[in-house]
Length: 227
Ligand code: DX5
Ligand code: ZN
Image (cartoon, rainbow, N blue to C red; front, side, top):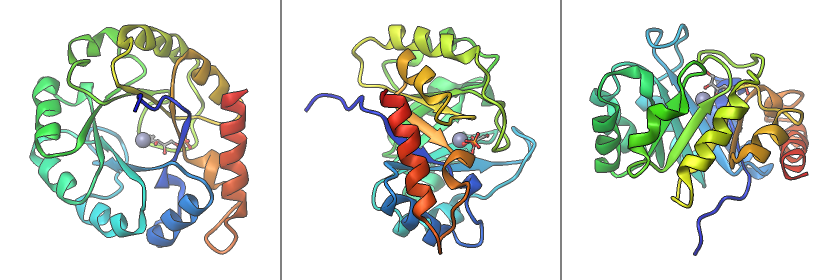
């Protein structure tokens, strides 16, 4: 089977009800989410704290599809095994999180997960050039990591284009994280992205007791990206 470069929408549960993650994950999948994006923050690599591997393990049984874990933590390596055991399908670490990102990618695959590498907005595409034969996903941050609801940084569209050319026909997803909505989705899709993370643009207007807006929001992003 050829590599799946179709558009995938990955709602970020950073914008969900933190007291109700299980039901939120079930609701977004029922409403058409392709992946579930899980943002782990440590208050050190980024100026915000979310949760760790125990919460990921608790969420896991509520997700049928791909659990996409985005680690905004430093150091990363001591925690890889725990996130893999928690059931992460993909573990993404930041190239800025330490001096040994190559080793980190090896460790993620060694733990049985797919390996993702994320780039902050100021980090050039070339930073991942020597990792392309050992990663499954490159995540382009289109906001500075730490918070949902920030404004999309347009300069990153060119970075996506560069990465798409560098990747060629390697089986690597390009994921966009931050400020994705029906206006910005077509820009990054045209530049070569296939996984669109969206927090506020998916969860706005809905809730577990009224999840239909999640579906409408997901469809609006997907339709805009495909147009
Ligand atoms: C930001 C997180 C994102 C965030 C995106 O640090 O990595 O996943 O939830 O949120 P929105 O879509 O609201 O920009
Ligand atoms: Zn994220």
